[in-house]
Image (tube, helix red, strand yellow):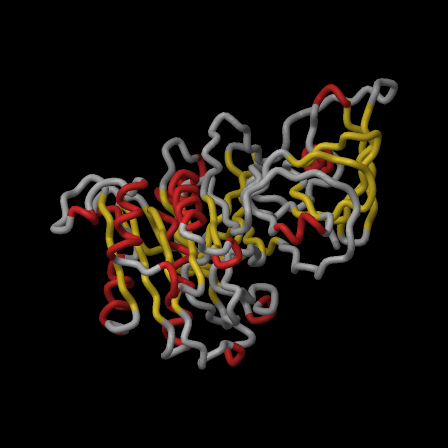
Length: 396
């Protein structure tokens, strides 16, 4: 499954050095055992990984974050990213894996993954999190229980995975929170976490509103039947949701739905800083997303870029042919296979690094906040040098 998570503003960016930014915890892989596999629908499973006590500090997370899974299939390393679908609990990490058409990993997992299997699981990362104070595994007392916040989420298909984690957490911790969820699927049989969502509705009838939209089944309300297009979205905002009193919006799903929601909210004057979004695909299937990087042959006597990077306190250098239009990530992987990445599609943000020197262009960005770009951070899977050399720091 080629899913990835990240909020932020999608924009192209280029630039040079910048001022220091607060460091984010960089993900690292650890082998974890599968403790439970639960069937959610015919096409999706929930997988629980057991986290031993000595690693619990590594797997602290805020609702909305994700982990990358890594294994070897048919002799090749495969990485896929999945949002954590449960509120923070010590000793476990839960993700939901839905089949993708032609998805190598997702189909294998749905057919073969079982209790006792061991996969490499990256420590949680990602920025699809509330800007309001939320709880973590190691800091459950830190959530703000006094604020009367209103949250609204739009999710489609497996986009429910981070949203249900966020909803469960804030509803349980703060008796003043209201949460509206619009959840789009093809049919009732495709709804993931259907029982858990019903339980939330029963538990918080006055504070949690659930609106199922089914594109291939007729519901009593025409507003909840069919695909969410511009007309239906306008009706939802006019008749069901009030955009003026929402403190934060969460949008999670395919590019087309997320972009439609963002554009419509912007037209209604909702500030961008109130909108958190996560993409599962970029909407551009023609763009390659590799697992180990594409092969590149380097002639040391030819015209090459010099790519320098720091990772785990160690510096490395690699030459990259100018004619190859190779990304910084692709070049770095040829000399350091442990360079962090997950989706290689500009969506998840795992390959984030800070440009120390040199000029560059970044083709896509669906993961970095505008302030991160201003401070010199880039997605190395989308960044190419435009001068003779570039130096980036993955540790920054």
